[in-house]
Image (cartoon, rainbow over all chains, first blue to last red; front, side, top):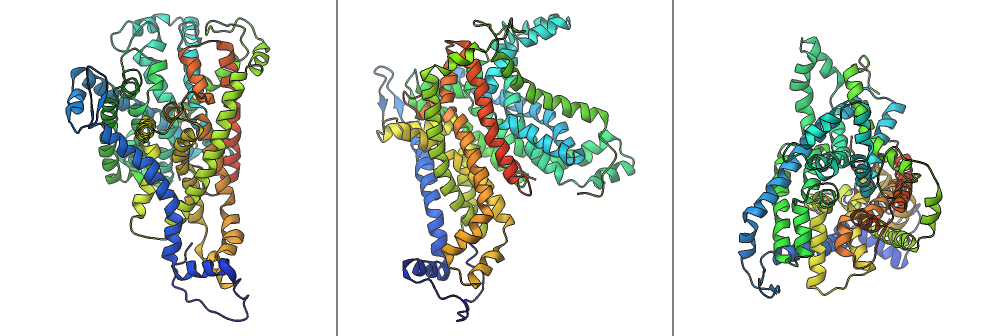
Length: 322
Length: 271
């Protein structure tokens, strides 16, 4: 509470007497020593997050400096950089590169799909429509993550609705052509990178829409009008006025899309190829392989990437748009 | 309300926005159709026939009920912990300025800013280093950690709107700190807390990534679903459970929306 406000306490007798007892003493103490109240308020959350969360992160980091004995499979609790050396094997670098590329593609695609929704909601939707747009984004955002993935498994399956729809439209050749391409193709969409990509975009899209909309809400409409009054085409207005002002929002949204894609292991496991992403690598290293040090070293990669990302985002003012 | 309402939106923008929203909603609607399909083995579309028999089958499955009960218990306790911690943190951060204030808000946001798998494996490795066996409480520990931020976001937004002078006025009128909290602060933040609590509940109810690392043999609803997705046993039952999960998560979100609709907004968004 704003106990630090510079107001002297007036003890006018006309006002109720102090309640006395332990409660009164405590209340008076907190009033006289606001720092103490602050400390008491902060202590539980900081202790919880500090011990449970930061403590665990530290324990994880510590383990990445251990190594695994290749013969016995036991974890050797001595400081070594060997595990980080293993991380830079070609196969592991492949996994990291694949994940980062996917995260970048997903981020760009989400930004492109999110912008019209956010712009319409921010500038044109009013009253009932505004509420509708808001719920239209919030409901998918909060719907069950696994159910959303499951829905896409139904859609992308070979016998599913997408194939049916394309067959009705006589466009099956397009799908077959796409699936026969290397890297992005596969037996069916549900076992291809294209499928993984679509599901990632779908699942993280609301995380992009909300901050972009927040940034666009702050753009006064007359700025756009002024731009067109001065002779800019809609494209020029977008490039020179809207986009720069929406950029902090896009960056804020990209924190989510990028970070969530980097760490996800369920989507590529259910819809995708057998080639691993960072999340899957972590999961299999700690689970079946029992190589917790390497799993820990793997998780350091997204932490480092996100560290740089957040640092850059902060410099661009992205946190004001959150 | 702005005075600068321009002409209506260009058609291209309307179409793009509508397509975007359809893209977000059609897949979820599809779940409702599949819950009634008679097809057992594949995901064939269109469904060969419609039936409600799978609802009865699902109703009689003990494993579904066990998972549901575990999920509800975990979510309730995590939400309670998150409500206390999140409110305390929000009150401290929004009402006063102190050294390290930015660090505290970063600390709260970190569990959702970093990928869930990191939170999960960090907790798991901490449990194994400390020889803590997996139990109900290890799940709660993980869930409460990332639920704090949802409550915190809602409470901070509301505290910002609550004027500090009300608290001073209450004190001037002779209320002690506890009375002020009970009669002035709490009524002001109650709906924000309720909304935050519901969102935290929904978040915990739905969480799977951290849970796979902190749960032992116990299955929450998402873990059960994940198991079915990887090794399908009875697809129609999964369809029905998926539909029920959509409906169950819908309610807290709508309620949270109605509680906070005038003025501030629910977590994850901002104006």
